View 1: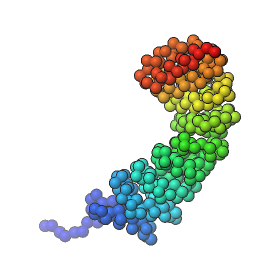
View 2 (view 1 turned 180 degrees about the vertical axis):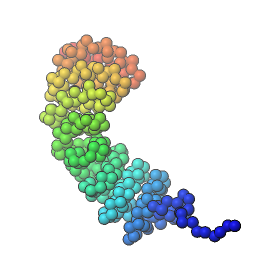
View 3 (view 1 turned 45 degrees about the vertical axis):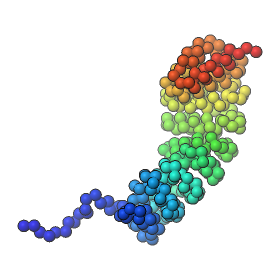
Length: 340
């Protein structure tokens, strides 16, 4: 015979850590109200639920329109570390959507997040740097970070943060410095990046070389590459075990050797032979960067003389599967065969 008995267990598919989500168009407004609650558990549950919802860009659009970003800005200052961690996680997910990145710029989220650069919680700092990385992937986002005056702080954080966060910092800096490298150059970014080129972490070496590529585009960056003796290290990285490191090192050399001082620093470091070896790299980017760097070195009489015997190699590259490589090879041949 059946008995009436109340189960001690929660109903199936119920997550006690998430706030109950209201039906339809009321869902996000209700969560926004709960984000502002004085009850800690209510705020935490609302953030957990919001983390799930903001994977959908339509929900991000609605959340921004009803004022969720202002609520989240306030929660970044919450005394509870879990609230801060989940808040930065929500913002990190929102930054993966274009509408979210636009919201960041409109509601001054960059400055709000920067207040957590020294947060004691590693997860919190990791989330904010991941959010900055996502934001910097679009020019307006990178410009926003530069305009906010954060570059100096991000450069100095390279010396202090954990390796996983250093990788995020390098990604962000590489994108931002393409927009404006002046503040970074005034913050000793070149010697800091030089140190990262010697890291035992493959990703950090690769990303540091990529960031140096952006640094060496302006003339002052090229000068500092020679001033801090970075070029010999880049030449050494052309023989790195990781293809991506080789490609990025060749890219940095491509810009650094535009100046006469850079050309002769690379020639003194015997850059030609490892660059020639990169011409057969499986990475299109590595082949292209190597050709362009060699073209720069061929502008010096000493470099042109050494490269004369390698013209057949460049002619083979005129048949490369990449049109960009083909065009670069044609330019290189003209420079190498030029006669005064």
